[in-house]
Length: 174
Image (tube, rainbow, N blue to C red; front, side, top):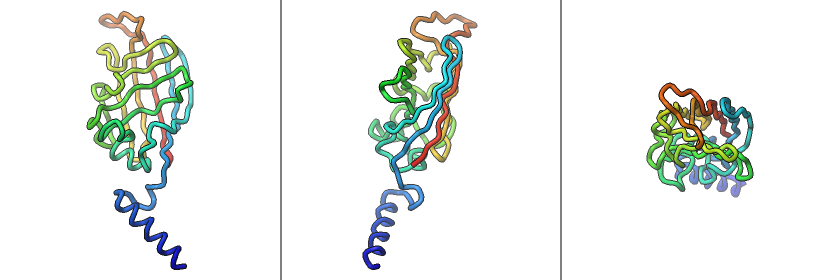
């Protein structure tokens, strides 16, 4: 009985010194996401991302301080499929660009050049011809909405409405 109480006390002290509480520091953080794309490409895919937030103990902590501390403080990366997938999402904030749950405009999504690769084509989320934004909730869930994002071989012009549009939505478990 003494060992059980001592073990619980050590766990509580460890959690409190990490800035968390017993309900939020269970890890690992896993994102469950769906990407939907229309326009030049039509696709819908669900995936699980177990690698983006490997250095974070809980979804609540990721939402508060960012999910990618190894890339710099207060950094958020949008969940992405595994490397063997034809979709590669390189969207997120710069170091110190993430300020907790809330809405982030297109200009904040510069990490990884704000790009998303689908097959052989790369799409630039930061293009002046596109619109994009990200929202992150206190529980680590969130979404990115984008429209008229030009690809490598597109030639956008005034009034252009080509490229791809869609959403990336995710939930978080820890």
